[in-house]
Every structure is written in structure tokens, then in C-alpha cells.
Length: 72
Image (cartoon, rainbow, N blue to C red; front, side, top):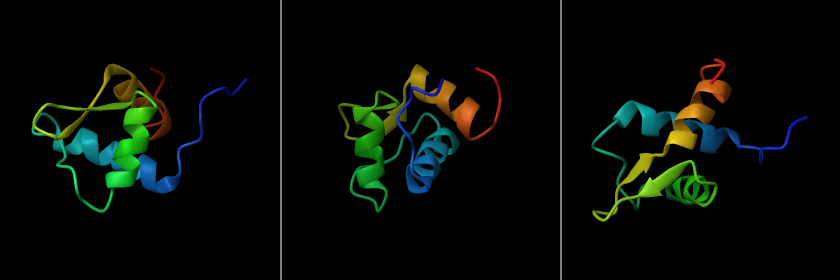
């Protein structure tokens, strides 16, 4: 049974960009800011003290399942 909130295409893209940027993180204030905030609210991303976003463990697992189509 599917019990995870749906990720819009733009939010899946933002999730993927978080994996691509890696350790430096994504800065706040970009066009995907609303998606990054939504991902943070879902526990898939977190905002660091410097204001940049990075993936959480849950975000990494969701990316593997939904974007890469791998079992996590």
C-alpha cells in the first residue's frame, strides 16, 4: 500500500539536485526554494546553520526508490 506523500515532478527534481550537489548543499533563495522547503517539511532534506539544504537519510532512501528506481 502506498502511504508516502506524492512528490510533484519539480520536487523530485529538487531532490535529485540535492544528491548531485552533495556536501556543499543547495543555497536558499533559488527557484526551487519552495520545493526544498517542502522536502524539509517531509523530512527528506534539512537546512543547515549556513542556510544551505542537504539530504537527510530519508531523502537519500526516497531518491533511490523514486528517482533511481532502486530498492532502498
